[in-house]
Image (spheres, rainbow, N blue to C red):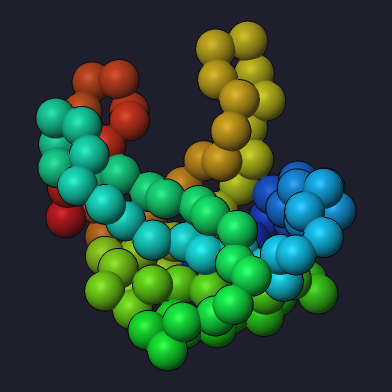
Amino acid sequence: MSAITVTDTAAEHIRALLAKNADAIGIRLGTSTHGCSGMGYTVDYVETPSDDDELVETQGLKIYVDRKSLLFILGTEMDWENSMFSTGFKFTNPNEKGRCGCGESFHV
């Protein structure tokens, strides 16, 4: 099982973001303490990989997953949503046990 999967729509958006940052070689996906349910997703540019990163190469992209977050997001699908109510990355995580009412944070 791959740590994460990336939809075609998310991959297109990641490519567009990376094209705007010449120093970035990929993105880092992780989690942080956030919101009322306890955890939120983080997405950052990667210029230099960390020894604590797990590399996922998919669709010609390098996605680095923070090892401290790996167990929380294993099997997650990363998508891009552009709707009337929300624009941004959307995560479908089989490990989530619940989300807050606004959908900004989750718990496992």
